[in-house]
Image (cartoon, rainbow, N blue to C red; front, side, top):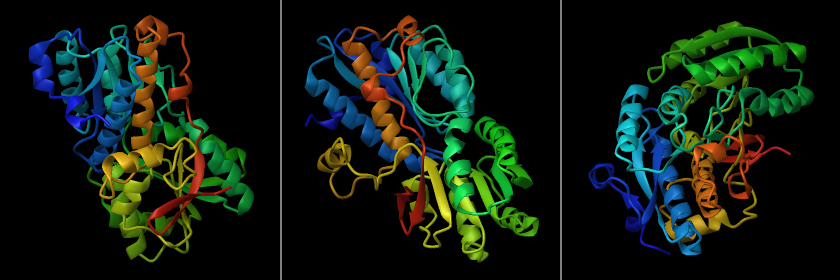
Length: 350
């Protein structure tokens, strides 16, 4: 396997060098700080593995795939300003990564009709825009397993909706209300709280007083972990079911795990699944036993980089082609699945 240093390029160096004839440079926009920063190390490791594999295949028309990291855990205007500078200098040829939907909107405005942009996580819905590929699912698509499987298994009729106050949770709540009502359920609490500063104890108290049977959580990153820890301290884990569209393995680790059998996640990929394509084994072989924990966000990042490499190999990495071409085999959308927390593991519910 190639040395990791060969696929990483410092953003400042990329700005100074400008366009590269020898390399296809991909701006990797992942959160390396902020509430989602816990997911950054695994995402970076997965993206590097994808780039190394693409380079070893030799299919990029004589060019090496390199990654230029952009910390997407900051405020949207800061991330957009950095990306605008890289694009103006001709320092990157495409953009890929996962980040919150407000950062996604800011980057979409910067890249529009200018450079290919592959956004990998579950998204807020709507039209992707010219040159944008969405590998994740919309809130309605992601919530389908929740309403179908949980409502069928239990008489869950009283729901609380709790999320951060920004674009993706707004869309989740907007999609959830009619879907729950159609299944005969009612929403007894609907709360959106500031991003990055959740008052978990107060929020848990509101949930307790609402008399809810299940909480649909669209809190993200550190806020989600903080809420789950407070929920456990309040002794509610065995009494009220929780389900989240943003919980993956790193968030479960941050929350200290859960053995209640009443915490669920809805994501497109889980590390506990059968390693049918050998991805998890290749990741373990590359990074060893101390590698960052794999999760859905990181796995999506791997798929995004491989998808861009496949487009480049097919001479289709341009805004016009992306506007009309669906994701191919290396960047296919994985359908959301329901998984239950079992200690520090998320196990798919069949």
